[in-house]
Image (cartoon, rainbow, N blue to C red; front, side):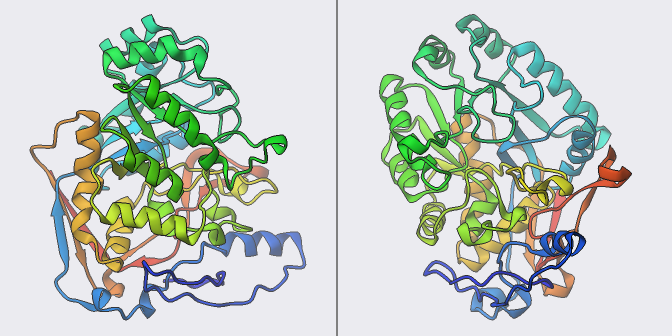
Length: 417
């Protein structure tokens, strides 16, 4: 349950959630400012106050096969060694892993080596997990390397426009130079994963608020020039993008994150633990995301974009973009889908549609059951996750603040093998 001060926000037609209005007092010292900043979570519902019929109905549950997260950041070193084992028991068994490490994963051999590390970090408990690897689109990538990647089981190539997000300094500036690579990908059946934003540019009036909308002409051109290339516009945030992709053919899809279904601009302006890229947009944009997911559109599916950052970095003068949702992704979704009266859409969104687009088989065994319970019996999100073997400023332990830290979701989850 929410125990900290949060920003007031208006409700939308797609949600009956109450919003808590509070005032924000000034913090007079650096220590007080840091403490104040750390407790200000995005303006979410207080589950204990929700009295909608959906929230108070009894015996609500849903069972499905293990889910697939088609976009996740698992990091490297001690951060990965802490995060990856926590994927076990989350109800997700398949992960498309992003390549923006330091240095980035730019060829097949690097991707295979990283995949091996992930399985080692997963340990015995993670034997049932599947890590599908991607390669960072860079000038060094050739058509021959694409064909090698396909032979070695690499799933996709990830494009980052230069400088738009974490570790994207090696990103691209123009797509035409990569047309031979895209042609090879089209022939081999590999997926192009697009971070769909243009870099900020004062002369062109591009900011984080319209960067996705300004990118859409590039998506249209890529689809027109390579109609059989499977393209995923990652972590979609705008109505414009939703409408465009919905109008396109069967080779273009979108991932939708957990947090973008919850958040708007009100939840990250001045609130580092709500800040991600692409940034959450307007209430109308969020409604468009919810509506397309509620419709059961098969080309809009789960990609959490879970991206852990140390707490001391998130609460610094220049917070990095990214929210950590990997510990409880399905309870987050069950809670939201139930509130929006679309819980039956959860298996398709989280399990079936993404696998179908990627050409992945459905699991033959295993299952996940999510059951609505009284809030006192629900799942409490930890305030922090401590990163083992990683030391922060002044020798303090490094911590990661999960999405909706400290709140209790009125759900329980059982996972069977």
